[in-house]
Each structure stands twice: as structure tokens, then as C-alpha cells.
Length: 255
Ligand code: SF4
Image (cartoon, rainbow, N blue to C red; front, side, top):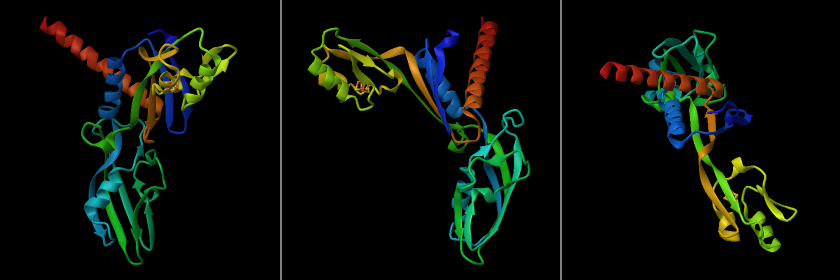
């Protein structure tokens, strides 16, 4: 793949959109599955609940604790590593993710405002436990984020569309990426095309045709906050490379 075949389209908040050309569906799907099932992150796994007289029973509370994303330094924590956590809150009031105390100060909750339980006066939750580096293939709480990809569009546009149909085609696009420029139709942001086919339905396939490119894609990655999107991509690529190397050496040994 050429170096300029990858371009960051947007990188806002937790979400990054990347344009990738010169690849195929199988490669991107391997990357997607690696991100979801193999890239390790920290999540609360084991808990000793010493006191809980609030309305949420222990298992419910444990599940909520497990789903709190923890900011992980992938250089310091490897798969299977653990770090101690604790929580001790007395009501009245809301227990938030910020109340989780992690022994290693480098590990923090990704969002401090996640409500965990509501306590009345005199109610108390006191617990200790471990956050463990795990993988999404074992539990969804270890998935570092959500990821998907979409094929880029390939437009075939008739050179001589009547101007009135041109206007109709431009107005039909739900994401407003078709404009009439002079006597031609112009696509402004092809990566935003959802391949809905509405322009084709309105304008007729003899005037405009939209097909999915099988070598160009937009990858959408949204971290849960534990790792940066850049780290997620780095790690997933490294895992894929290591797996491929392992497969190659097995082939060499076997032949
Ligand atoms: S396929 Fe849908 S999103 Fe894409 S240009 Fe046509 S109308 Fe717009």
C-alpha cells in the first residue's frame, strides 16, 4: 500500500475517520476483528465486596464496575497484568466512576462522571479488587472501542444530463455531497457517501450510477477512552504482523 494511501479525514473527541486506499475487505476485516478481540485493555475483573447495603445487588454492581473504561499505558501493562483497585463510599449521594481508587496513579478512569449506584443516608459500598489486562474475545468490557468500515463510492456520471434532472439529483442526496457546478455534477466529499443509492433512484441509472469501490474504504474508530485510537491501530497492526510471522514460521517448519 502506498504511503499516501492513508489519510486521517477527521479526528474529533474519541472518534477518528481514516481514508484507506489500495487494500481490500478481507484485510480491513482482519484489522477490525483484531481490534475487537485481541487488543488488550484494563478492566475490573475480580472484586471482594465487603459491604453493600444499597439497592443494587453485588453482581449488578460488579458488572457496572467492570464496564468502566480505564486509561491504560500499553507499554506498562501487558496481557494478564493486574492492578489493585478499591472503592469506599457512604451515602447519601451518587457513587461515580471517579470514586474508584486505583493503586497505580498512572491508571485512571477514562470518564469520571459514570454513575455506578445511588446511596441513601447510612448506606455504604466498600470493596477491593483487581483490574486485569484482558482481551475482547473473553468479554466485551475488554474491547478498546468500536470500529467499522465502509467502501468508498465509485460514480459513473453521464456527461449530458438535463439541468432539471441535475438539480433533482443534487437535492436528493441526504448527506449533501452532490452539487451542480456549471453544467456538471460535482461530488464534494466522496468519503461521506453512504451508498444509499437515492441519487440513482431519483436521477436514473443512465444518468448517475454509484458502485462500491472494493479497494478504497473509510475506517471509523471510536475508543472507549482506555487507549488512544492511534495506540489501538498500532497494537492491532503489530498483533496481525506477529500472527502472520508465526504462521509463516509454521509453514517453513512444516514444509
Ligand atoms: S449514494 Fe446516497 S449518499 Fe451517496 S451520493 Fe448518492 S444519494 Fe448521496
